[in-house]
Length: 147
Image (cartoon, rainbow, N blue to C red):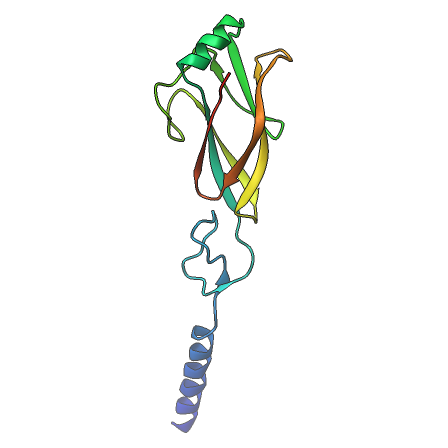
């Protein structure tokens, strides 16, 4: 009987010891790998944000007058989408809305990252727009392209 009590006590203390340990992981809810059970941040958080590139009817008219037909969009040198040069928006769009180009950018273990965007006539070296945009973790950043 004493042996059973001793074994039970040892088992109880072992379970209690493991239950009281901090769980490490990513504790930032803005990250893509957030662990709500983690109580101690281990530096493993990874982030991404979205960028929507769009233009209005005034810019569309200028693009068409310049002979633009199709546009190809790049972030940091990687193609992220294509649209017609006639694909103007009546108002500022949201990320993921049909029409403009929305790109999701992995930004690693930082919460903001400046990236370069470029918009070319599809299949040519004709550059219509370029600049930098700051991608913010778990947010939609809107870039209005103006000619």
